[in-house]
Image 1 (cartoon, rainbow, N blue to C red):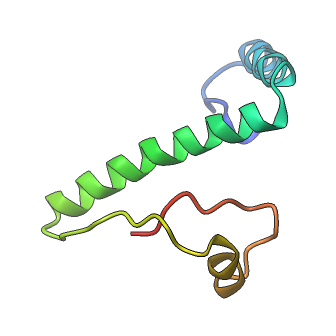
Image 2 (image 1 turned 120 degrees about the vertical axis):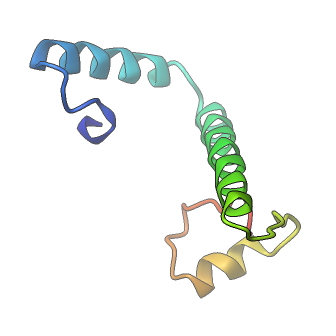
Length: 86
């Protein structure tokens, strides 16, 4: 959790933010946390696609793949989710 907090914050601010983050996610079900995580992945994917376009690369996100096979090919842990391929 400490890795996601701003490094310039003092200890009190870091501690308060960490508590709020933990409290927020503690009220969510595993399915809700997974949905939130996938939403964050899609936001990051959008920025990745924009950056690629700015660099002159044509990209396209891909859905409909065998997620288990992708995890296997990339040696990802079983609990990892693959939101999309580019």
